[in-house]
Length: 267
Ligand code: ADP
Image (cartoon, rainbow, N blue to C red; front, side, top):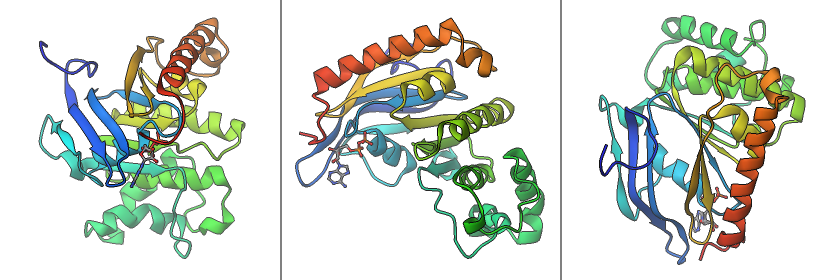
């Protein structure tokens, strides 16, 4: 469509138009960001520290407002109410069971435990934690805590899931498993994902689009389309296609770091 922001396929869910964000200390975290997020996209924001990835996610989440430009929500206007979040820290309630942690977003919407039970059980099963409903967070491994966090993020059936380096603190094997399981969920449920990561390998494995960002000021540097078909699995992870895509994304990230300076001072 003429004048449309890049990406986003045929049906954008959200379009960022000339979005900028400056802070009172003079840091320009984002400048002139034009980006369309398409319904059903798995978009990774990839870039060095300080390029504004988290700021972009916070703007989309409605936790912060842009200094310039606007966020244009499309489709039915449920917009911001229809977002799930998963952060690097699972941030579970330490005194609540797995079941009650997953209930939380529904509880905040006034859904009783009884009424929420089928949705909670379904999500716990989908993240492979059946049998751990009554476990406390302290009894779980890092990967299991992240599974609870994903179940909690998806229990409201959001159309958009925002993930801020969710697997960065996990060991590689756990990370691979969670990548696989997240893709299964995404393919089955058809929600849209915006995924912040430092990892070229992870962004190529997961996404259909990689938005490479540069710093100083934070901006979109280039977009890479990852045309490999889904489902993606271990065969893809070890394929020449995957290696070639990782090389391409690494090259673009290298350019973004060189041109952006790669230093986290934001000016
Ligand atoms: P990334 O997630 O890519 O590491 P951020 O979005 O966290 O980058 O930060 C982008 C820039 O904005 C950085 O220079 C950071 O220091 C700065 N920044 C982020 N939040 C604030 C804030 N609340 N006040 C001032 N500067 C901030």
